[in-house]
Length: 109
Length: 114
Image (cartoon, each protein chain N blue to C red):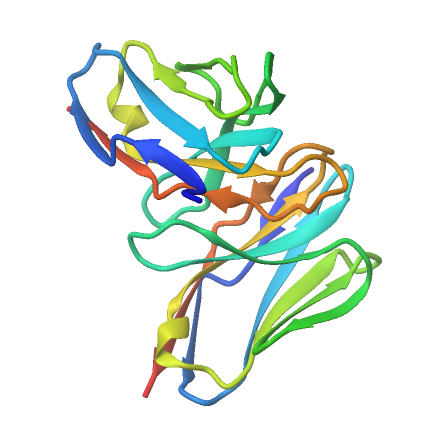
């Protein structure tokens, strides 16, 4: 079958590091993306991993292990503005993405 | 550079009415998508297009239709609106194959069917 699982909620304090995991089951796999969405806003693209390993972009990093069907988003030096929902999305066919249900991150002072 | 523009931002429809959600992008992207997002949920793909004149169904196409006559525009048509179509609709685009897989989303259309 096909599934995409991520935790529904994560809470962390300002300045901390948080990791949001994503596991997937797909019939095909091309890559894993991460998107951020603030309440009432549109999703914004954070990263795309097609190959195994860690990709870093500023305070955010994304990791992929194709053999484990697993990836994560790592947020460092958390800021209050990082409070948002984070979605992993799998590109399991050539042309479109399938989104997870999202992880709501709350950053506390 | 406006990116992806959606209109209207809000709309209330009565059951059985029809409407068209407009989406236009000025980035010359080949790929365009329509997603719906129900409260507290992820995005589900309705339809997508890989270029002018080419469209294909996504995960939840029933009750919707699309057309792609130009690279810029990708309208979504709702026929005979039903309460189950109450949702937030997002249009997105990305460049073609090998040119990046990050989607640019519009600001969304919040639709209520009563």
